[in-house]
Length: 311
Image (cartoon, rainbow, N blue to C red):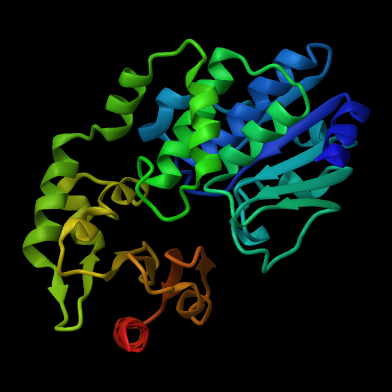
């Protein structure tokens, strides 16, 4: 982290990226870092780039840069495990690349890396980077980083929540921002999402072992007026059912293949994700499936994995 700070001090122009299809931690860490650097280094040009996700617009907006603006810049990528997931491929045209992440470091890209798999979120890493280096954290930066931590811990529910996570969140909560309003915003969804959630509960396929799956097709999304990114709002829904220990949400893409969002309460699933063009955390991973047969294969592997875990 001292080396990262030295690089930040060295460069006058910095561009911050994060992963595609952003969640609160992706945006919280990216925009939180932007806010910290802008407050502490007002003479530097700090930009955040990527797709503006409408459902998370309350967290903030991206900057617009031309291609030439990347030349000679320091590029920082937060919360992104591998290069195919980096939003905006122009990260490759920067002068120096830094990776700050909390996923397993299977793709060790970048000229300088800070990867802490023990951290709950990239936002937790960024917050402690600021605290440990004596950087001021504005109210807006605290709001963003707090949102990122809450998002990736499921409101401090998931096992990645440590004593350090809670301490970091408490320090951020000392800032002046509307925590209750932020939590309401993060926990709210439109009626169309409520109807989709109802569909999930009505149509879940649950094995006798405690593994569940659901298919979200293009036709279903069009029926409810839901985008691919908005389906992320229902990923945690199956986990609220006591009988379900592991689950997978198969979301059909425009080209016909499926994005597979996999979750588990205890049995690690990331190795299964790696077998299907994916990866991620031990209990929260993503994969891709390109046929009905592969869909069934993933489901059976999750069942076998849970059975082996229980032995």
